[in-house]
Structure formats: C-alpha cells, structure tokens
Image (cartoon, rainbow, N blue to C red; front, side):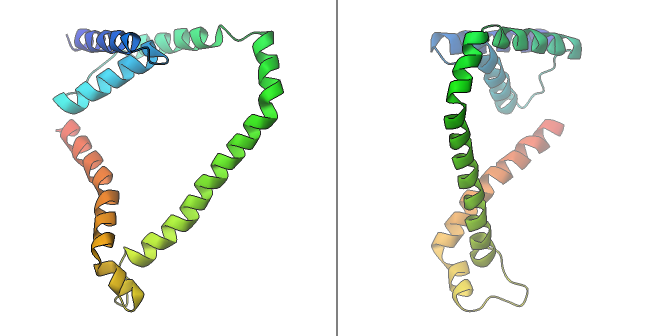
Length: 151
C-alpha cells in the first residue's frame, strides 16, 4: 500500500512539473513531490530498492541518449569557458567561507575568556542576534524534521 502511495505522489509530481514546463519534469517532479509530502505529512514514503536501481539505469540512459559526436564537439569547443566559469564559482565559494567563518567566530560565538571589546558589543547587538537566528533556523528546522521522521 505504501508503494502505491509513493507511486501516486511521484506521478502527480511529474505531471505538475510537466504542466509548468520545468526542466527534467519526470526527474525533478517526483523527487520534489515525494519530499514535500514526506515533510508535510510527516510520513515515510517507501520504494523497493530493485525498482529504484532499475529506474536509475533507465534515467541514466535517457539522459545520455542525446549525447553524440556533435554534442561532444560542442562541449570541447566550450570547455575553456566552462573551466573559467567553474574556477570562478569555486573561488567565490572558497572566499565566502574564508570571510564568513572568521566573522562568525569573532562576532557570534562567545570567547572562552569572556567577551570584551568590539566582540562584546557585536555579540549583544540586535543585528548579530538576527544573523544568528537566520543561520540557526535551517539547522533547527532540519533537526525537527529528522526527529519527527524517526518517531
């Protein structure tokens, strides 16, 4: 019975994504629909492992089928630009981590010897508290969802 419910939710998700012309509707639709229903209904959706693995093989074939020599040539001609884009995005990601972590460690986390100076003023400011809440909310929400799933 649970397998049929999962199948129904997945089919509805695929149809909805197809109707709104989303990319990869029969991949993203079922994933989105089952994830949302699982979250909202607080229930586990199950699917046989063999069926999942077979579906992944078919999905891989369907996604790779349009790849041909012409596609490979187009990728090779654009490869330098794609490598520039990937390099830029990874550099931005690395810089954001390098700047955010020290900021959070200095202004959000309390020091062991007690807060003093600018860190004490920043730790008590409404902006810092708001930032902490904004950063903590997704973590707490994920913890609640996982706890409710296990129950």
